[in-house]
Length: 262
Image 1 (cartoon, rainbow, N blue to C red):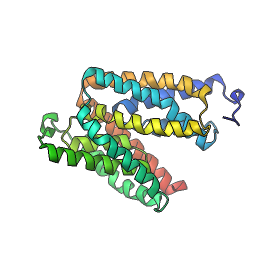
Image 2: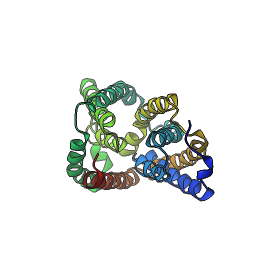
Image 3: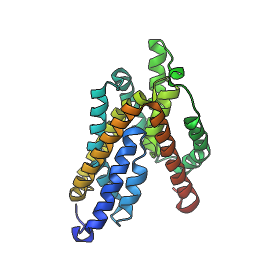
Image 4: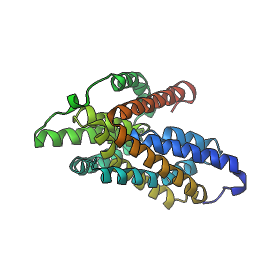
């Protein structure tokens, strides 16, 4: 990668980015949305946008893997649901990224600005975790998983921010999966999407590895701590952090819609 001078980054700036990527990893491991913290922080450095995106994806990838490994080790990942949904999440992402060429992404942002407060309210509304448990037949479970993954995958490819939170909400409310298990299971989708994006950015030389290395270490630490707290404290913790993640997304969308646009 060219055009970046390491001398432009002093120790204070690197420490600030390390702290942000730790917080982003913590948020990602629980509810998704860490990019709402890490991408703006990287943009403040003045790096080119494509380098920001490539470095962010590359630095976040090991953290996602570490959180997934912790959840698998703890027995919280529904492997059947993950394997059923992964091909359709990837298909949705592919179709969504292609559709971006033909539709106005700003319209999607405006729709979300008006819909997100409902999602936030539902997330904070107190409920018993056991009440969410429902039994579906194999066919119904398969179709519901496919639908959630296709819809959120389309959104992820077309627009992107907060897709992890939407996966969790879809698996929780539409499939009746517990919040902790939903948060753990969708990490496979996050890993696949981030891995393919990171590969493409690296292929085109848009990753600054000198910066990505310390940021990835901080992100791993944040992910591991967040995953362990989620498994220890349970669904009430996930619900609170998910609400915070959706609030961050709501604020980010408001800023984009009413200032610079999409």
